[in-house]
Image (tube, rainbow, N blue to C red; front, side):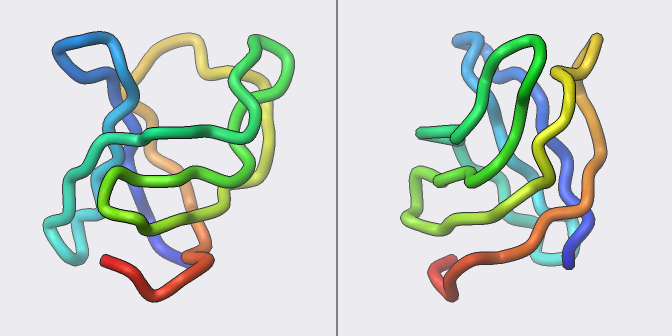
Length: 74
């Protein structure tokens, strides 16, 4: 499990940041993105994918979370 941060980018899209590797990338898809259920499988622009436990959408961003890497692409 890794500590990550998700924030809004300049165009209003989600941006993923992994401090341990200084990796910042756009999120191209999120399994759940509603006010009631937010998270699940996240796919990055670089082909990587991570999983965060689904939860209610955060009231404001940025938010720090724990995520599990689903593949080795980075």
